Amino acid sequence: MTTCTLFSWSPTALDALTPIIITKSIAVVTHTLFWIQFLVCSSLRQRNMMWLYVYLITDFLLILRFFILYGIRLSSVCLYPIGRDILCYFEASSKFYLNTVQSYLLLAFNGCRYLHVVSNRNIYREKPRLVIVIHIIIYFLPAINIIVPFLTKWSSIWRRRGGSCDIVYSSLIVQIFNLCVVYIIPIVLNIFILGFGIRHVSSIRNVRNEQIILLRRKRQRILLFQTIAFYSVWLLLWSPDILTFQFLNANSDPAVFTTLLSVIEIALDPAMLGIIDVRFLTTWRKLWNKIKRRRQIGVVS
Image (cartoon, rainbow, N blue to C red; front, side):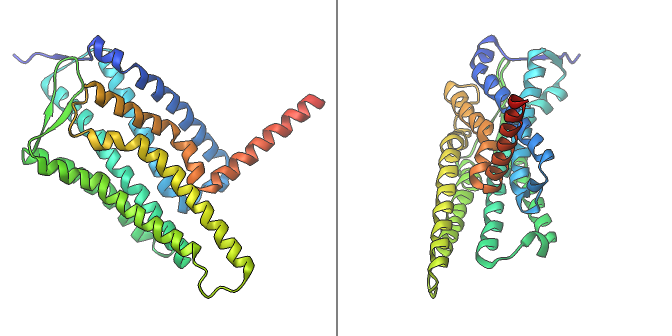
């Protein structure tokens, strides 16, 4: 007779997750405020910002994933083997999948922005089908990259009562391949694309007009600031988890710490978009000025 098994965390595991729970709760607030702003401000609902919005949706899915698993484990649900296996595979692989998708969403955003800056081309209007195909590839290939190692026994699920489920790899080659796919390739391509974009903006070859030269230099400084500020914070908080998740057990203290860093990055992402795209900062200033004016009117009346 098949018996059910409690799907729960041990008290030690729950205590270790306390900082993550607090940070995830803060992330819920910051993301909620962002989407309220998105609904209120029509100027932010632009096609060329779709990659950033999908990126934030994946952030929300990571938050939702955590709280779903937290709720199930906290309530100590008794699951039969099939249900337990499904939840374990979901817990172990969904974070890996969403992190991979995020890497390539940023790459797609920078690639489209590069075409707009260098060639003055709006790929969203000129080639909408290509944009759809890119979306499909970004969502489909990471799933294949996770499923194939399971089918070929290059990876398996690690599970112990009272702990989180995790992926264990039997091949170092698979781990190195994953590291290249998830981290090295998108980061290197992003660096090249951003470098070429900055080089184009800063180029003053055959330009004689002093005003155009000054404008290009100003754009160069803005682009450099956006690039350095955003990617410094993003890499500092996001990289440790991506670089180590294959080599650390998800329940270990180092893994919990790197997870906390990535959660802090998720909580900061809505604000970080203000750095990567100046339209967010402009909208925030307008909203702040409106709030100040209403407060002044209220004080006067």
